[in-house]
Length: 380
Ligand SMILES: CC(=O)SCCNC(=O)CCNC(=O)[C@H](O)C(C)(C)COP(=O)(O)OP(=O)(O)OC[C@H]1O[C@@H](n2cnc3c(N)ncnc32)[C@H](O)[C@@H]1OP(=O)(O)O
Ligand SMILES: N[C@@H](CCO)C(=O)O
Image (tube, rainbow, N blue to C red; front, side):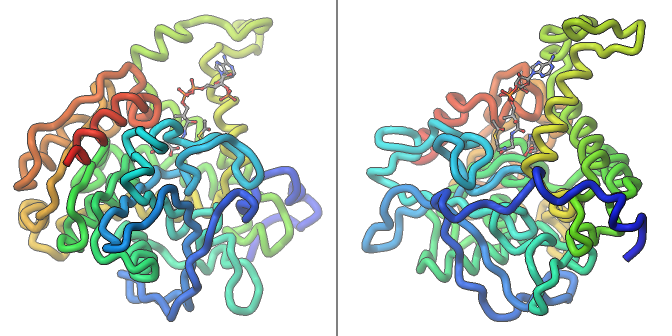
């Protein structure tokens, strides 16, 4: 451990904290040692998850829904105990909805490495200390391997569908390629076959901003009882959020307008700066910096062709009826990446386009269009 004396840390209270069980979460039983793709081992993993609907007697109606980088198991429902925000795809699940709870049993885990109940760098090692800097690097395949354990535990041999966007889409793709016999249908949203140089490039200043914060303490801020690199995480979120939104949207919403009551010519902010400050503040209050780093690196590791003879050979393994979709204005995960997936997957039709000005975040914002795709995928 290194860095400033503990006394100079911001307090550990008032910021992010792990989800509260009162929020309807359940936990998979911590299992046997869990071997990672790197060869390292975690002594056991648990995943926090939420479910909607009822598993049928044949265990054939289960749908796995996988969240993006900073999402969690709270797919649907209001903010409340244990849930700092309303569901991230609120409106998709329920009676008569796209994920119809009269038909389907919907399972949404918090990703391995996350900070809303699943094993991650903020949870404790066997000796009771938080993992912090000792938490191993994860790959997207490790996240999926943990989800496969959860499926085993729930007695689900084959998912009726696996659905995800962004980091969730990477995992849905890894499910379809790595476990083809366990996936009947797949919806891959706003994700690539492999994380591109440009996508990795945008994460580089984010990771540096976190590491440069004196309250990072090499990643061991929790063991020191301090609140961690809030400024660094906030800067990372500002950079990331700017890449998540559409150029046209930002121009239309903010243009060159000054934030109300402020003058950018005299030290004040543009409205767009204030908007990014707001999103930085929100993330810092609901997310752990170490999880942000671990999951960002996992996304950077994503390459479905690694060790499988390349992308084309990997995609040829998919047997699920697959739908691939992207967002019209997403220049972070551009449609060309989804076109590559659709061309390489036997059962996929042409790329479906979510029409939206909201950029990459369109996969979260355009819930009605996503719902229509899900309904079509699950139609019979
Ligand atoms: C709603 C949630 O937070 S979901 C929680 C779980 N989170 C996840 O799963 C991660 C995914 N979520 C996200 O990344 C984002 O929160 C998104 C995609 C849901 C946000 O998308 P949108 O609904 O389009 O929200 P948008 O980007 O327009 O931001 C609206 C916020 O900006 C604020 N805002 C708008 N203009 C300004 C401004 N000039 N200055 C300051 N704040 C501003 C609004 O007041 C609003 O605040 P609130 O969210 O606290 O109510
Ligand atoms: N806004 C999304 C983008 C990454 O998919 C998130 O924070 O999870």
